Image (cartoon, each protein chain N blue to C red):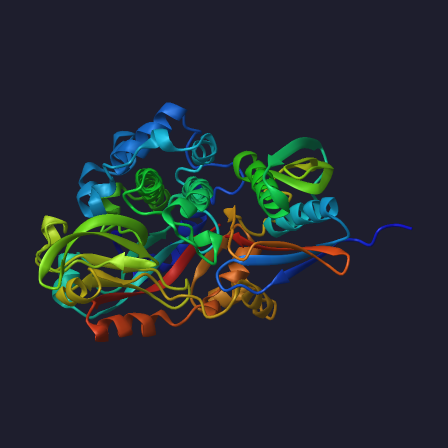
Length: 379
Length: 142
């Protein structure tokens, strides 16, 4: 999300902004939720309608939908396929960040690489932006677990044998494959709703903390993109257009300028790609390229990737005070679990600048802007 | 003579959290695996044993059964916010386990929360007997 705010003008208010974000956007651990517990009917509606459901409930605006991958809804979702446990896990977690590597980051635009693209995305130097990194929460994981159970049993009849049961699979066109795809689509819709609600809560937190109107704040969606999803897309293989199932796991769609699935306002420039960093150094906005269409089925990286195990990171974090370390990096941080924060400290990650530079040099995405984190909340 | 306590050792894993559990028999292994799970979620020092929840799981063989048992325990946290201070196994058959966990709902004001566990993965999941002891290797998705 972009704002109309300039870092220098609001930097003294950052602790208040971060505190308000932390109070309005729960981690959702255990059973707390950002919005009242849903009815099962509402949950099934949101699993079917995706971000449209959130907008219809007053979270965000109609115009946001145009700036989401798939406009925030996969039509192939079938909520009736989900287990009771998956539905139960989803009831209270809408509008929650989760734990693990999920977080919300306030950044300031520190560097612009492609001024024309930055203009198109309405970004300017020193502007405050907000990045949300979260997904389908427990509901998504439960679908994974339910599907693993089914697929592990079914693999033998398809003559598939794998060394690791976590990699269970069946052919896409098999009943189990089709069941999974429709369930996964429901999880994707849940994730869009989750981010949409968090975005709306974040806007509320900023207006409340700064005592400004939504108009003065100018909070609006730059783009919402997935990094763990499988979808059918058309790609050219050996000179021939083919319908493919593209699975991007820890990868982000990076469609080239002119693609019809890019919002009209951005079509000449290319699809925005969001790269969350390590909460301490930087995050990036990239743009998709023709090379990505040719070489990587329209895909680029998702983030930095870990360089250190969680256990190692925790050990290293014992040597310093986490709050002081984040403050030293110029980041106001609020978090629910010290353990998670210790596992997720910036030192546990590769330098994301190296990762995006590699993508840039390979031509599969181009750097548009770099954001310096100044505020973080996480579970 | 009292049985030696089960051993819980955190193991290295790049993106997730892993444990190796050692116990004298399978019921003790199941109980200790449950303890390991809840200890990763929160500091249990201040968790009171106000409530008891009866948990059952079904599966074929020790591996499937331990996986199912842990999934059931984790559901108590993920759906009800329940953190167990103690896990006990009452009955363990080849295809079913029945037990009880005692604890209370997570209260962020009183309990130090560590991390949310999304699931019990099948990755490298193992249960085996060696030198008269039972062992389990578990990787949790966080």
